[in-house]
Length: 423
Image (tube, rainbow, N blue to C red):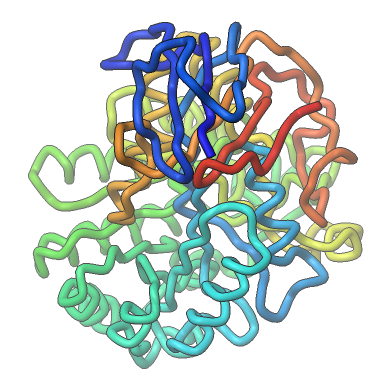
């Protein structure tokens, strides 16, 4: 099977260039094909950008155990609709991904039922309890690409130090959820004037900052890289910036909600604006954007966290943390970062493709001869309003319903096969 993507615009060496891409079976065989090349299927990409399939370093598929929120089928369809062709799923399932058997379950089910590439992330500690290290070696053999206790911090510093050393022996990235539970004190939104006005217990930004500082120091001490998940505060950005200048092996991600929304989104007790880390202040948002601009923050991840309607349709304090993100991440990133002049299109794409792929050490995020044909076609001139009722995800918990954005995924190709088309 040969597929020719004709007359599309690709980003090559930071510049937009017209190109024709030829796919044979599951591989790219030419990025500068003859527009009249023989093909079984021709895709007219005139007016569209032809980009590497997006890579999400941080999502929650909820399978096994919480399939009422999301499962492999709905989650990967949601990812494909958003342009993600490779996704790394967090281990806070039931049972958690803390042994090789659960890893094999996710991989086998994803191959049978999923429509995008799924890469499991294993737990740092058994049961995500922060005490005893998980069987990282066996999980590595089974197919994990990283370890994390995401959703929970590893509070014990000695356990985290040993985790870095142990994971380093297997070449596994360590992804840290930075939150000092002694400081969050059961808070439910950012600590500040807005939380005071709403009468809600606040989460101070320092609860993130102190753990980011700890992870940087532990990385420096052990010589093992650490990746900081969902960065949301001004001080965290500066800590990471200075660590990189000192040559410490730290990478970082943020999510679209942290450069798009502030704590003001919680004003009407909107539980779809409740997440962890919480939405922060305007100063924090601007610092996150600066971190993206100067390269302090390497990656844009979704932290796709689906929840059932009933888990959000309660009092703010009792509502589950998290929002769905697959189907809005690209458009929000383009609208807030590229369209407003903060990043070039090439810089944004790198943070959604090659950078997360490099952090996870997977061969994804590029359109090159001989590489897997994971490709998306995007119309960045297409302006529309987000409509959660059309999401492929089982869950609709998004604060962006009705937002005006630019950038619609028209086609998603995984391994040479079209898995999504906007018809």
